[in-house]
Amino acid sequence: KTVVDVLITLGYDFRARNVLADDTLRQGIKDFSDWPTVPQVYVDGEFVGGCDIIREMYETGELSEMFQTHGIDAHPA
Image (cartoon, one colour):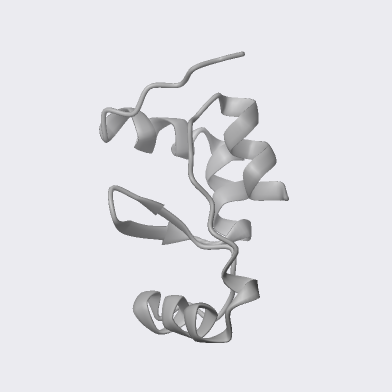
């Protein structure tokens, strides 16, 4: 919920997948990223981090900066 709230607050479009509904998918995403927990945030197919990292990046302004670097524009409500 925290990651979704951050992305909505910043006005970024995103897609979410419920990996908790499928054990194979949940384990696959952990193996793919070599990160043990969900949620996992990817930008342009690159793993960025989980909840704590996204929250920290949001608080320091790094998250918006990273999106801008990738050419991703916010769409404030």
